[in-house]
Image (cartoon, rainbow, N blue to C red):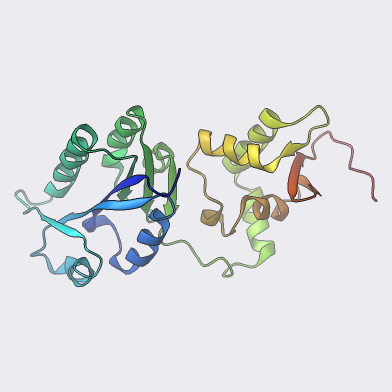
Length: 239
């Protein structure tokens, strides 16, 4: 995406931390210009006071929704309606949803069907279907990149069968006859298949993820990196 792409940001204030708004806007700005900024909730509720303190500072439009029925969140419906209106009536390239609510999963798939990039940001309590539906999903309550020791990170990653399979499939799909796959195409294949972000695993870059797992072998050719699944492969000769 180029830097003039237009992004619509929709915040489910009941299910997102106001303390991470700086991070949200910084992340979304990587994809383009955020020209629609809306947050939904019952602004008379004391629980939303942290959001009220940042709305004006960040030019976020508050959309008021009263809790018409106890235990029901009317904000979700209002947000969905506004996203659909935006898809039909506004020229936007991407939709950003800030929430941890699985109710938005059908909305994500609908926006994807319209050819829109869908960026999701939420807490780790966000249900897997919602996370996987997004083009990219980033956790707002992720630990800092230096919080976990490298050995602990490697152990956790190796036990994540879903992640390991995802990495192996991407390598197999882009590798040459010797099993080596350029890191760029590997990353593109992963992005096309899942809402993967290396930062959710405690690493800055995809290459760091591969380096942290002893199930893969890496080599450099100039400025380009290559990765290979070591299963059934003869290790590269030492030079």
